[in-house]
Image (tube, rainbow, N blue to C red; front, side):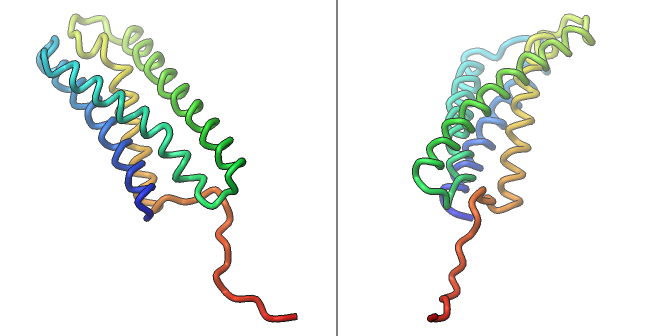
Length: 145
């Protein structure tokens, strides 16, 4: 695993962990845990934004510069869009299923879904060792013609 892949895994795992812990604590307390709540949210947000760039960068290793830039740009936008969509889906599902008064469940379910999804991304990248989308170049020397 390259250092870039390790950094991407670390950013995704940190962001996912911070957001998951935030939701668990708010749910357990049935309310906020100020002043640390904002630290967990902002820290997780910054880590996930970094992971949104680092994951496509790590996966596009081996591509030429222009295609790699395109993959990183498209991948970053896709990961941010999917994260926002998961947050909305999680919140909508919680609103449809849960009618109780626990603030953590009612308002933070979208953040929980995002946190768990990013933990899954980190685990997948770590398990695969950072698979590149480019074909690996052979290191075997070619025979002279």
